Length: 114
Length: 111
Image 1 (tube, rainbow over the protein chains, first blue to last red):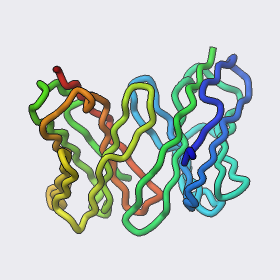
Image 2: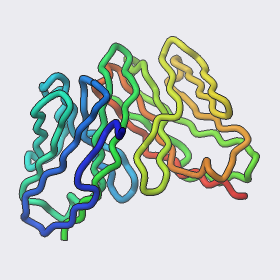
Image 3: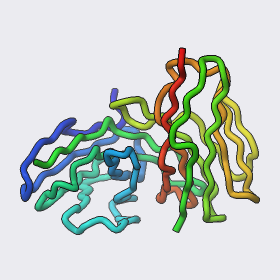
Image 4: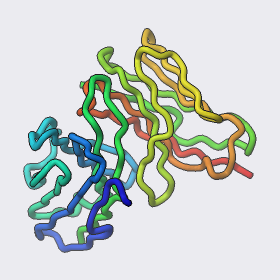
């Protein structure tokens, strides 16, 4: 069974639209993350959620909002999409503990904004 | 905040040779250092990690070393094979909920 899954795998949309990406993990982890990987392959953390509380909110536009209906899900909503939002978005999960723990990544969602 | 630098950005080696990738970090509170391998079109996957109470860790052909004083850590791959070709990322974390990634190293193993 897939440990961390994301849908959709590909998302092509027009500027100005609103879209969502879903993420689910079945590892029983208590923390989930969203990363953005741009065309240069840089991985930047956007958000992390622990027990339904937002722990990190990096300097991302407020057009991006994470929503966690339960510990196993962390969805990413994006409003008013812009060309610069085109990237691959990865969801990840881990257990929080002192000193960090292994993150497991989802397969990624390639977002293309036209 | 933490700043992780990674070098080189690209690396080409002959099959069978060794490859070394180096990272430095700025926050002395960082205590967990994972390495991820990302093949083309795939997700990053953990290949090895090290915690600050350990200086070196090995797993078959892969090893990681950590120098806390100098704030740098390195990935060593011996007897490289074509399937080792990928982008490798280092990362640093101090709490488990903040991970700072290096900019990646694109490794090409030439058969």
